[in-house]
Length: 170
Ligand SMILES: [Zn+2]
Image (cartoon, rainbow, N blue to C red; front, side, top):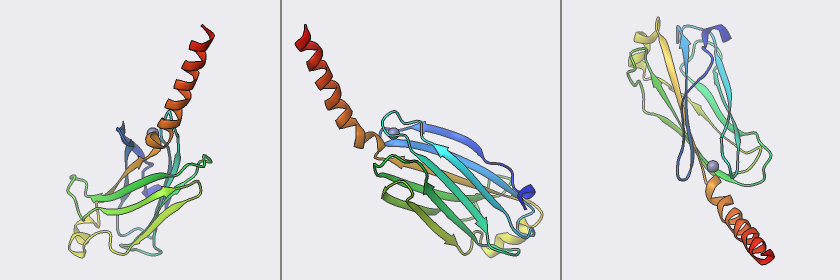
């Protein structure tokens, strides 16, 4: 099962004005003839204001199958909500997109919050025969936002308060 799935690869990581973006990909060999496969990774945003941690989990349905279960769970303990937007794309080994990206998104996710979806048809039937002996590349893009905005004003007011205290001591 696990031997048919390469471990995840963090392909890209960026800090944006609103938050953080990360992109992962992993390969499923001999899809869809293998009986089952799963994939899990944890990502920690390198945020200076509100660092959060996320578990991305994939599991194929039992038996040779074209459907899978995907979940995104927040696994840190800082009680401030953030927004998450995730999209899952499927490619063949030649980097050809096989289906429209599937989206999972939720605003105001707190620790232990999660968003999940069951994808009934990952790959259109017409593409399945082509993939039988090849590999399926699953790419997961994760965008976390509202972490900078939520904390920035209070940090800014704390800094200005500290500056005032320093000035008052002069
Ligand atoms: Zn941030």
